[in-house]
Structure formats: C-alpha cells, structure tokens
Image 1 (cartoon, rainbow, N blue to C red):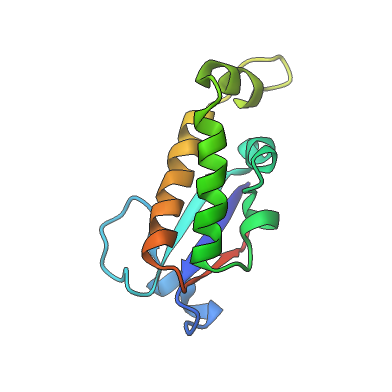
Image 2 (image 1 turned 180 degrees about the vertical axis):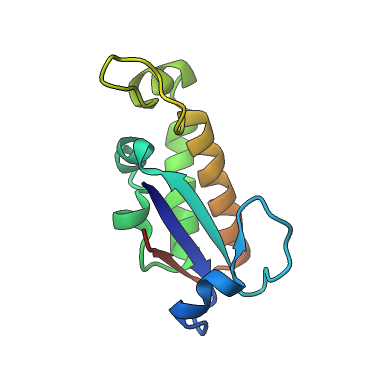
Length: 130
C-alpha cells in the first residue's frame, strides 16, 4: 500500500484528478492543474515522527500550509545524523532484513519534491486518497 497524495487546483473536481494531474517524476504537461505524489506506507512512522504524515498531517491543507509543515520537518530531519534515521526508520521484514519498499533517503527526497511543488502552488489543495 502507499500514500496517494494530490496537490491540485481547488477548482478541479476530484474525479478528474487522475486525468489532469502529472505524476511525480514525469514530464510536465498538465502541470497547471496539479501533481500526484506516491510513496509507500512503510515510511509512515518516519512521516508521523516529523508531523508530515500525508493521511493525517497534510490532507486538506493548502499548498502554503503544507510547504511550511514540510519545511519545518525537513529542518529537523537535516539536523539528525542520516545513519541514525536509516537505522530507526528504514523498513525491515519480520526477520529484521531491510526490504526494498522505501527508505529514509527516498522519503526525504519525496518530501523535498512535495515541498517545492507546494511552494510553487500555495493556493492548491493537498489531498491524500489512498
């Protein structure tokens, strides 16, 4: 499972989001309507620890509000030793082995991209729809 996060113009009906929102990491063709961001639930504890969990902390806010929340989270994250964050939050299976679904490094980059997009579109709405 994963977080399905949309940052979209407020006048676009929800049933059109999949058609008009560009996917993260794709060429920008409809960028004036919104963007879709997706990341694994495996990093939920990491997002929750920094108060940027998509389903509870970001959902329903404006781009401006989310950009500020994510900025604060990133400032706190950047102060932590990366090896400690990886040790604590990188997902592992029941045997303690690292899994291939998500990482702290990927989650940080994901948050940075959402932050940048929200700063560019402060009046868009942020909705999590997984």
